Length: 209
Image (cartoon, rainbow, N blue to C red; front, side):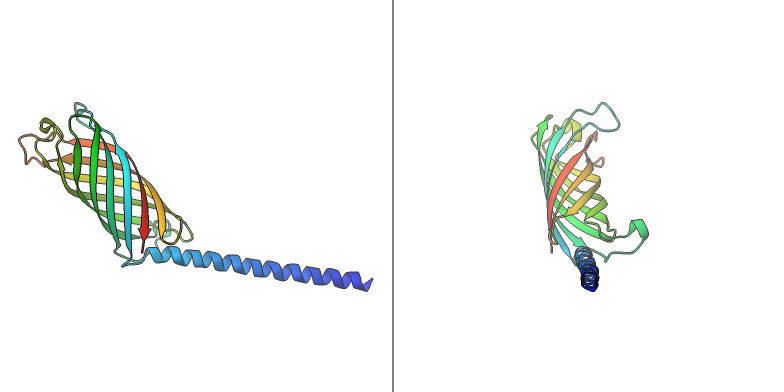
C-alpha cells in the first residue's frame, strides 16, 4: 500500500513542478513580447511604411462637387518623438512622419494627384497588445491635373485626418488598416476654389527599426 501512495505523491509533485515551470515560461514569454513591443515605441525609433488605398468623393458640402475617385500609393517615413506615456486606456506615444504619395484617377476628369504630407500621429499602446490603434492628422502640398474648373490650379494643398489599427506580426514587421479623409484645395490662391473632399480605406505594411 505504501508504494502506490509514494508513486501518487511523486506524480503529484512532478505535475505541480511542471505547472510552475510552464507558468514561469509563459510569463517570461509574455514579458519578452511586451518588452519587444514597447521597444518599438521608444523615442528615436524609425518606421518605414508602404500604403495603398482607394479614396472616393464627393464627401461633405457642397453636394454639387463632381465625383473624383482615385487610388493612393504612399511611401511614409516615421520617427518616434517620445517614449510610451502611461495614461490608462490612453497610454501611448507621439510619432511624426513624412509621406510621399502618388495617385491615379479611375473616375473623374483628370489622370493624377501627387504630393507629400507631414503627419502627426498618436499611437495607443496598451501593455501586452499587438493590436495598436492610432489617430493622426496631416497637411502638405499637392500637384494634380484634375480639371482646373474644380481645383482652380495645378498647385494645391492637402489636409488629412485618419484613424486605424496596426497589428504587429513580428518585432519588425506589421500591417495596418485605416480610414482616411483627404481635402485638396488651393487655399483661395487660385481664381476659384471648389476643392475635393474624399474618403476611403488605406492598407499598409511597415518595417520598424
